[in-house]
Length: 114
Image 1 (cartoon, rainbow, N blue to C red):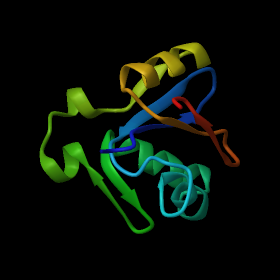
Image 2: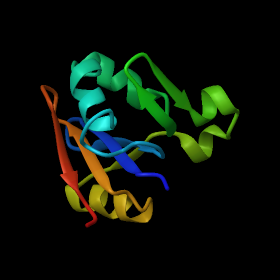
Image 3: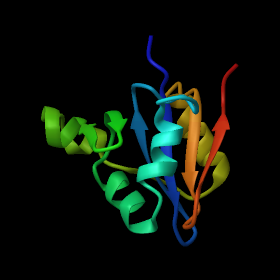
């Protein structure tokens, strides 16, 4: 069973987010610690989001559905929302267990499901 998550960055007045299918938990070797340790600048976080939806994320590698698997960009491109409530609604649609948000300086996380 996968632990899904939504990974987002805050921009001026909106959010850009991508879906991640595997290892979205915020412990051990999950997405949370990986984001904080290896994707911890605005530039690197933006580069990650620019990949679109991903299958998994590791310290030195992300498997992007469009780039690596050939899925259609229209289906996997980053999603834009204009409020936190829209971002949370998108996470719910993705059936995400966690939401990670980069505020320009650091990653925050929120467990969405028990």
